[in-house]
Image (tube, rainbow, N blue to C red; front, side):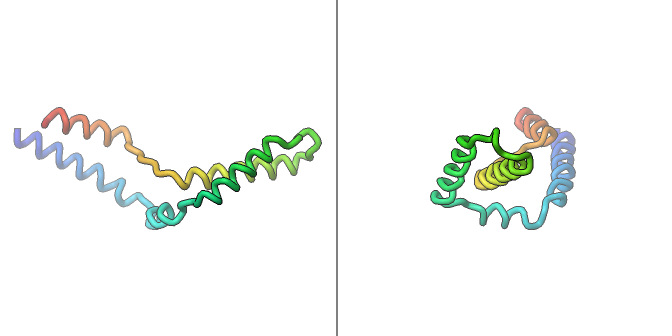
Length: 102
């Protein structure tokens, strides 16, 4: 019993070490400083509604591309505001095994 717990803990620590070193250094500081205010969110939403209501049939292809890139930038900015939790498959499997052992 002690041997299997030791092997499970050894596997957990060895698998988690590789993901810890793979993370970017500035990822935590970037997410902490990108909180949007209500004014910024409302201006982004107003701009998106304005683009949706436009008559795009009269626009040239370059103008359409510019609108698409602007919408992508707005979408990316809005997504950065939220907090996401990512759990990999191997990590989830290890957590389930540990719960079954205990």
